[in-house]
Length: 280
Image (tube, rainbow, N blue to C red; front, side, top):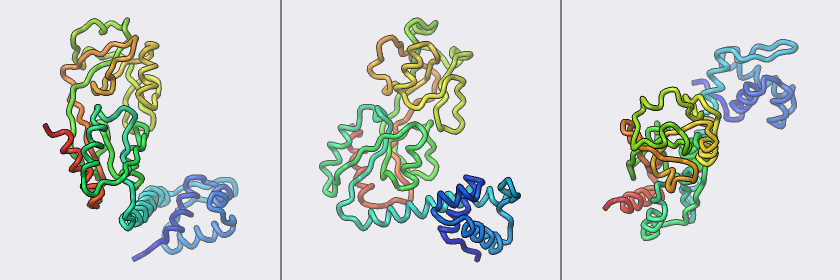
């Protein structure tokens, strides 16, 4: 079996990102000749050419593209394994919960209170993130559990439990044509400008790019777009905006998620507490 050391993967990824031996070597804190020699050695061992070189240009071959993509995942997995191993051996480790600001449907206080009664309860560190990277926090070990929204967040590779389901509403400026409606259907929104979420693959909005709900609500208030959101994200409704139920939009589910391979009691006790907090 052909093997590469993690440091060698770092060499390949740095050069693939920079496409310049000098910049890649500076990023790696090594000499440029050492990097060139290492890349040649890696290509020889793999039996494929990873980079196209000329006096003025460095390019990636298809093999180089493949190694960069999968190598990055491999390095992230190694980093996550090291972090989790250290935390598993730390009896005083805190539990890290990631969510977006306001993304708890009003349940977080009850969940934390229920968790505090668990025999193995730990200190909980709350981490806030943008719309695109909460799942990355769980996959690479920066967070232990997270509050996500389905079907919007990618739950692939994550175990999860539904804590709350709610309807979705469209948020419009008070002078908008739909502001006076008791309810609308998705077809009523055709032709409207919807937000484009920063860093979210597949985001199909045609409006300005937004990074969070606060920024988005400001853009709606100045009549640059409208948005369909879970109801709890806009309670109370900000001044100057109107919330209208969307009768045929699929419901939004708030889920507690964690890495499906993480079976630590630290995580299991928090899941138990969260489910206990939302069960009538």
